[in-house]
Length: 75
Image 1 (cartoon, rainbow, N blue to C red):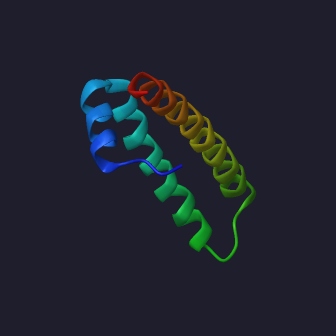
Image 2: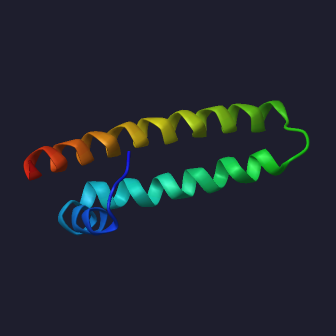
């Protein structure tokens, strides 16, 4: 989905939940990337990675919902 930077900035300004989700999503993305850099994962790290990926996906779904709501108000 192609989203204009201006629209993202407006939504982040208008919607505190969206802003918080964007920030948390970025942190989770970094966490997954760090775990992916490891050659071998312990069982605990593997669980942490899967849990983090699931949280990240739920946040992405919520971000998409909010974006859809804003886009529908523009049309």
